Image (cartoon, rainbow, N blue to C red; front, side, top):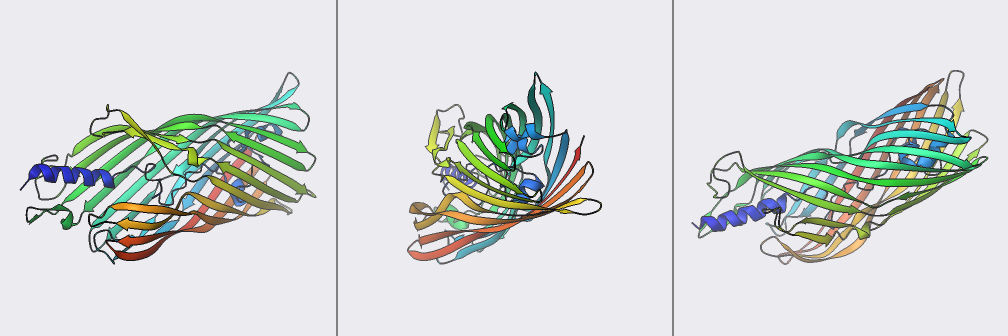
Length: 452
């Protein structure tokens, strides 16, 4: 038995399966939301149409220029319950004609948002400061795929967080400016248990069955600015935002452990595994937004936003040889698509004897950074040797919201649901396939606040 050859094959197999979460978001991405959309039950209940509303401490992230219009200090925190899932379907690379089906469970419950802001006046100028924490990317997901050719148990938890420090000023009547420094941190931990197909390791007439455990830990870091402006005249507002590009750094530690009965030279026969450390850098692009809102008779608020995010400019930089992290870096185009998103929403205030009850509804399109996959050609080794990009995957999201406002206490609720479908077509070792994966979005937000 050629153990050196087995060692090389297993090493390649491990690294192919262990591409970290953000690096997976290339043409073959899997419905992760990396668009950095803001949070808060009120904005999300209005479909995310909040650039031209920009009220409350949530504005520190959505449009910092709006903070200066606060009448008093305000603090709020939010909770997110995610029950989304993805029905995944794709060709089984090792069994032509067979289709892989399993459910990717994105469920999680997290405190995802805290914000506080306070207005003040200095030298005759209206000013405001704010601070906001939120989870901007959530990687919580899991699946258990027990399939004819392999078994894989996968879990991932946590995500990328942002802390925003905002300042707003109103230099002239009807117009304000704001800026927020966004500091990114957080990370994720990913665990995969795999029994891979014996056909991968048939060498010199012997079939080797490999099982392994892989643990991936990542830490994020980065910073950028969000600049905003807001024109406010009577019942009409017009806002704009500019999100500066930045580099999201990812520091990875990967531990790959042999848990099969077969001795593999690179791993030996122990659970301790082999440790790999390396860094990635993802280039996040310029993002521009504009939004408008109009209030009718103090009861009805209408809002609409348009935002473009130039993800086609994004690149990833990583070590050329992950076994030797000091090797020269390689930079590649991620081949992402630009995101052009429109968002519309409305809010109606019901007045009761004891409280105000807002009723909200919203809608947004949900473009992804990836496309359908067409004319994919999978060879006898299970490798994709060619494909072409199809149409950009675009879903939709509908929002509903309400709340309860009594004196200085505020309580908001929002529910989002939507769907997006990704097609994958081609030939697997000469056998045609036509599959699709479908995301079912289901998010429930709660925000509680107080005026002071």
